[in-house]
Length: 429
Ligand SMILES: CC(C)(COP(=O)(O)OP(=O)(O)OC[C@H]1O[C@@H](n2cnc3c(N)ncnc32)[C@H](O)[C@@H]1OP(=O)(O)O)[C@@H](O)C(=O)NCCC(=O)NCCS
Image 1 (cartoon, rainbow, N blue to C red):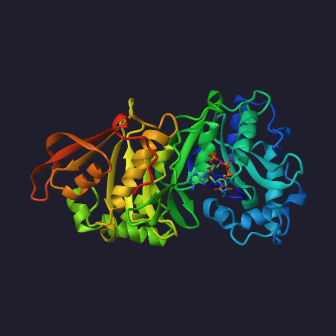
Image 2: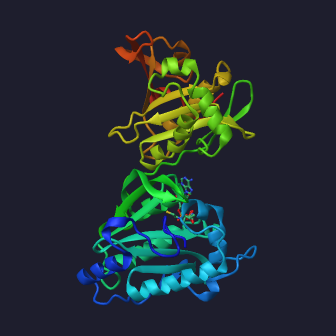
Image 3: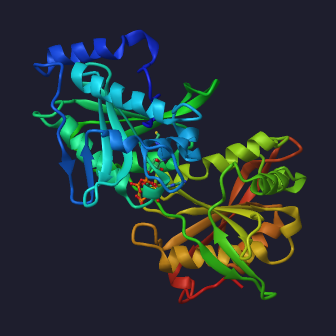
């Protein structure tokens, strides 16, 4: 069932390197003495990892917290290879496969339960892969998500996997379908590193899809690599008194947001000043843009916002601060707006709010003493936005930007120092 991108039933690792039982034997030869491994009970007072029980399977009745309920959940079917139309019979098979896995040393499946009530929360498995290497897969029922429980379950299971009286693993591999940010963050939190996107890594319900992969070694457990930045949501009031919110872009499944990004980035004026954007800008470019927004925060490099009406509705501009991974900060800001949003002071208001947050309110490590912006010398509207937000022009780069006529145009450089930016209690306006 459940698990990274694992299928519930027969174990089907990717070709070449042998079946799971063969790999288990190979692990066995170099590591453990016996193929069968005693199932430990692992607990941290909040979650418990134990053997799956028949009672965990359930029928999928409304409100039930069971294997069947979890496996029918749309997020589970979206992000794992669990069979569709999951039923108690499949749940029974999952239990039997789980027991066989422990017996032949090929897969070590745990139920994740509440440490106090023993209520079923989800499952986690470790599959024998390369020599002394295992692949982890996991999932929680919707009722158990968003409380850090998977991070806890992973810490327990991986601690056991690396222990000499556990699996004595030397490495554990995590894989997910690209876009599964909840899984990636839980993996990052426990120390997985080297996150890479591999085109066509996986197959999902008949479609070859991109996948993410990362690995973890014993000394890294509990030590996340780098920073995962939070993109704050900030209220903004514009000069006409209307209420907006500077917020992260919604994902590529939000059709209104896709249409908004397409309108703004596909506009001729945007293209005139931002020649690096794809042209013509297609719907698939817009989806890719939205899908890639969480990558910057996840790698500690970039914060990316849009501005949407406080009452809901799609974003009308893009505002990005990049360079948080540079040694001395000095993040750079860049922006573009929906043609319909131009000329209303929205970009200036959004920029003022973001700047106030970055210079005065952001957490240590993100808060900065200086911001910069670089604007094509012909782009007077954009320069006005920077000046309205308090930036000062300090120089010029010659023949820096491509020109539509095939030559090069100058760039104007702007900066804003905290010392020059007032007290910071900014709402936009
Ligand atoms: C993946 C899954 C197990 C994570 O469970 P969870 O309870 O959310 O896990 P945790 O709370 O321990 O950690 C998730 C983190 O991701 C964050 N997160 C969730 N959705 C996110 C998103 N779309 N973008 C960025 N971060 C996100 C959470 O806020 C949390 O962050 P925090 O540690 O700063 O609080 C759960 O979402 C799930 O069962 N999904 C369906 C099955 C699945 O995807 N399995 C994994 C396949 S590889």
